[in-house]
Image (cartoon, rainbow, N blue to C red; front, side, top):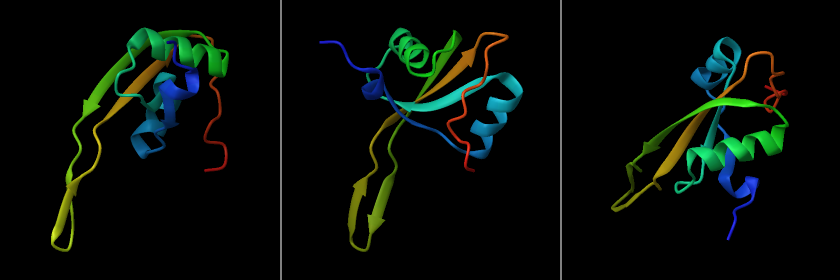
Amino acid sequence: MAKSAYQILRKPVITEKGLGVKETESTLVFEVSANATKTEIKEAVQKTFKVKVDTVRTANFVGKERRRGKFSGYRPDWKKAYVRLKTGEKMPEYAENL
């Protein structure tokens, strides 16, 4: 069963570092599905934003323990993808209102 682009790309990571690499390195940063492959991420970005992707780098993050009084639990594990666009591609504006 094929996953849609919206199941693979969860949300953009809008942080100081994420916006910095967007401006300097033509790189978009997304939180993606934990079991998504680099090829699936590349195809999802190309389909969603109509741009050409050069490379995809991923990083897995382990959920941290969180406490609420005497109760403790864990935040979910998640995956981040750094998607570099090919030179000459127009940068999509997913964070226009910041």
